[in-house]
Image (cartoon, rainbow, N blue to C red):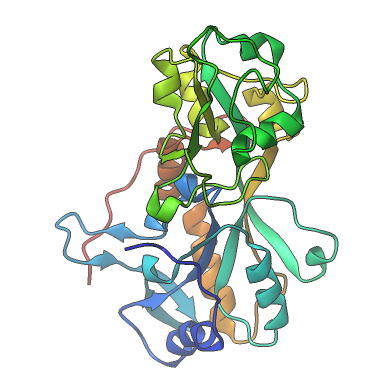
Length: 319
């Protein structure tokens, strides 16, 4: 089923804390918003819960609220994937008098106005927009301007010659590939391009890296550094505006197309008390071995250094 962005309703905001503070529950939703640019790294909240080894039950995370312990499940059903988190951040601020355990996996810095009411609770990683081509492609040496990269991503520039890059005969027409899951032509909004891929473009999960790695000089892969860095020997990240990404420049956010991946919540998390307790448990999970192993497997570049070695614990049997 397509994952359609929806607004967080007041009912959804109130269900979780009400359930968590009234009586022990088998499951309840944790509202989390995941922008399309980071969905492949965070996942459609498979990182927010663990499945029992026999696959029969979701393993709950124990949350202490008001002297009582509750079985709280960070369930994937309430996750929202959207092209921009801005509307959800505004909704959180607008409804801050009715706090609930919710947050946003953000793909940009908070603005000064947003920082008045919102706070980064976890600095998870880094990524960047990338235009990748086959190794040895003329664009690897010449690079392109930022305007050209945006034109290619949006489908306005359809030939390498129009981009100012000379390629061999037969490869001049750009074969545009955009990263995404391919559902209803929805793709990741990279280099400012809209989520809907233009006519003639293909939406594939790796953004066209495997095709470029085969040596196809026509392919322009509009994708992420988290994916491209795994193809470093067979593709190259085209210098855009004179700069090609590296792990060091992306991690330091020194590259112009780099962005942070953080988890953001309201600054004030209560009352009710359950909001603080549930959010604290979720943050413990995000910084724990299960989430760390998932982020590492998905290719996320950590915010500092490298991922620490992790021994993922076996989830306990469900109650």
